[in-house]
Image (cartoon, rainbow, N blue to C red; front, side, top):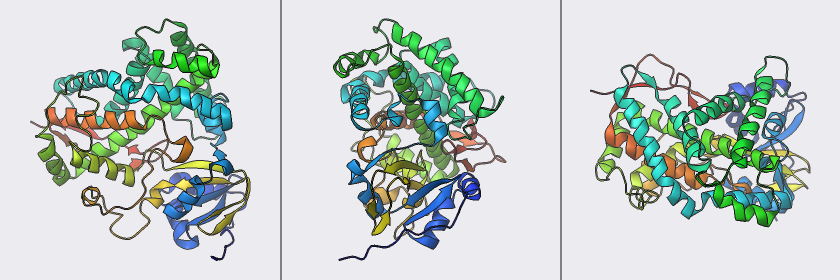
Length: 428
């Protein structure tokens, strides 16, 4: 039998310095994994936290769903709300998850596809008329938000823009110090959250016809006994907006950054794009650029998700002692699955951005950019659809070039994105 080992510990007591390092140093987890192994414990502002990497430790964790539950930092818990799917566990979580999943069925994605294509064409027109350089990352953020707000919630124009303004205030404070000092990001976010929920309640109180995909929820809501205008559903939609918007915007921004900073990659991808038609027909839009028809695009998306996953990790809390990669993890420990470090953990050139590895079946890593297990992100399929459509739509119409002398490094919180917004102009 394999000998079980004690849990390595950084020795941090208060965890103040560890918390500062965690937010400032992208290599925080890797440095400690290199020193302590694939499973280690530290303290974050007094909260014992276990970090894990590698397929073995992650598989061990997710194979025991009855022994773990969802967990988020206090700032996220407060800003999402007690009713939110993210903060629920057990039967209430499963019931609400089943309801919300209806928004992302294959038939729902087919319904959304033509609207996504229209939003891409609108953005293309904006780019055509732009006389000065523009931040492409900001365009990707507005696009990703518009997809959720328009195709799912049925919002347009001014209503959508108002929601976006408050949403940016709210989302930027999700991973912040949860003390509502006057004027602090967290205090502003709490006020923005109140306004967002009020606006969502107005949406839910109106007739469903013409409201994007919300009518898909009606039957499931009745079955689960959740009133349609209840605050419960408002908080589910708030989570949906964040999960469907922030992660997609991050993935698109990071993908555009790689293509525009590495021209050989763009040339390689354009060879495939030139064989594909744009725009797709409404009937084909949801699947015409899938991995079978656009394998290079699929490989590029996978490599972006490997190197810069939209979330650096996800959390679980142990409900009893577990064994992860032969290490004993006690009960009531918060476990963070460190995706960035784990995606570079193994043999080969895993520190190099090289999409071709996914075409040649060189990559054996189990990639989980949208989380894993029973709580994997429900919007995964919609995000992947948006990314495929945007890349084909944008690069079928335009050649872009980056403006020099800007900071191309990625800020990490709440998700990776170029610090200076990836300023670009249309190539003439």
